[in-house]
Image 1 (tube, rainbow, N blue to C red):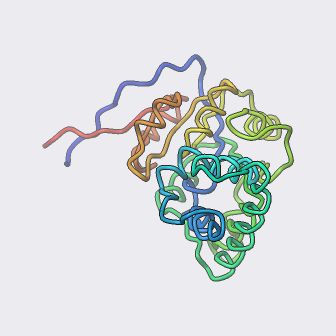
Image 2 (cartoon, rainbow, N blue to C red):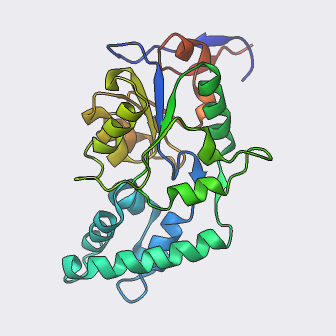
Length: 250
């Protein structure tokens, strides 16, 4: 497709957007979280049953212990509540090995979008339940002096909060530390639990369906779902509106 860009309909939002909040795993970074969860299942359940769809719907975006419990319960593991902590610890050990081996990369479209949002003058925050998020972002060098970790005005990754996603606490904290009113923030997420958290916090929810899971993100309440952040119309975003850029056929 080529030709002149045409504006897609704008999702129904009540206010002008002026700040962005980004999740990490699956949004900014291709991380080994899913692989670590799967490989850590040895001794708990059959690894082959831990599918990407199950990871996205049951585990992604949740604090470690909550994700472990959800995974074991989904797999029908006996005494899941009693075994969840051991599984979570096993996953963390495996994840640290994978991170140390360099199994982390950034999505190019995400880096372009982050830079574009900053260029618009929007304050941006990063908010992940993962306590490994900051270590992973520090490994993504943007230039000789800055890593991905350095570009955000607020960082609430890995904070201990009363509840994890889909509770909105982490996103409300990020908005407060920017500072920005929740209704003026858009949240970029790849997991249904994160989309639900953004909606619960009164924020616009932008879903990134990198795994062909647009339906589940829309079902969770996303205002807009894209497969690449290059699809966002930056001109309209500069006016506070979150919508897709589309093209006329020439």
